[in-house]
Image (cartoon, rainbow over all chains, first blue to last red; front, side):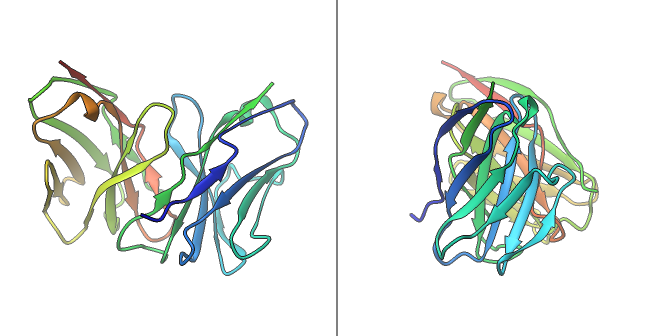
Amino acid sequence: EPEVTQTPSHQVTQMGQEVILRCVPISNHLYFYWYRQILGQKVEFLVSFYNNEISEKSEIFDDQFSVERPDGSNFTLKIRSTKLEDSAMYFCASSESKVPNYGYTFGSGTRLTVV
Amino acid sequence: GEDVEQSLFLSVREGDSSVINCTYTDSSSTYLYWYKQEPGAGLQLLTYIFSNMDMKQDQRLTVLLNKKDKHLSLRIADTQTGDSAIYFCAADTGRRALTFGSGTRLQVQP
């Protein structure tokens, strides 16, 4: 069964450093997403991406965040200057359409720890 | 915007049925999903229901949708210890990807 792959599975970084979280969505999917889950809290929407541009973003997705699809397969989330409160599990997801008939496929997540 | 609420914890005995409940606020939600998250793992899509359906059955899973009350439930028949996990309800209005509930932790006692 096709999978969304995320790397690394765990990243530890110092406050103020830049991190890049990587995702390989399912190959025939067109819509890509990032979500995050702070420990013990809800899974929160960050951003959606379609046709090489951001289609929607939440209030959380401020200027320190950016997304990119640098080639035909990877989808990345960059956090420019990490803060302690950025510590969370970050999930990438993809779908074949905007309101997919078969749901969104999520990766296993990257646990980001900012120290 | 959409808000999705779930109870936080459910404990059942192995072999019993589990019923996990969810309420949502946006009546234009098109699809409603149930995801399962095991410790340290990602979000696994379990099942979903389209808003024009009242019920969907998939092996041990039964989803009931009451659109009038904006209430969704997931019933797991013959619950096993391997079903122990956090179950997330999520709603899709077509405007902003998915809105998740807080998750219900299901504990299955042997």
